[in-house]
Picture (cartoon, rainbow, N blue to C red):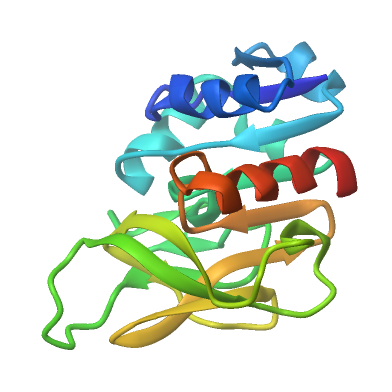
Length: 195
């Protein structure tokens, strides 16, 4: 049972359609019981960290997510919410990993970082099984997580940043796999079948 957590601030349907195309049934819900009983979960996000955390708080989802034991994949803002704090609104986030989310440093490149970029991952990570090193994925973000002990993949936009993070049963990707062609589709399939 694959469940997409309804954060009320994401393009949920595009994530659901990505799983539909792969032949998986994914349900979008904010129902606490369905979330707790799901086999695997997706935490998507578009917009600001402050708005997302407010929505999760209002739906009573913060502690539920923090106590999940099944695999969870955060996408874009969903990944950033897995950190302890976001400069975007100066808000405490889910604190699933001790890192922080900060504005990408000004190196003369335009923000947001938008478009295709190479991703280099840690060898042996099942999320990237069958995906070539330095494959391209699609990004849209102005905030990022610096490389840290939970980083399993990096990308570069003026500076290196975490393209994917993981700790225990929580995984996050900064890029949009649902918009990343065959590599994104394979990553989603790996999450369902190999994590």
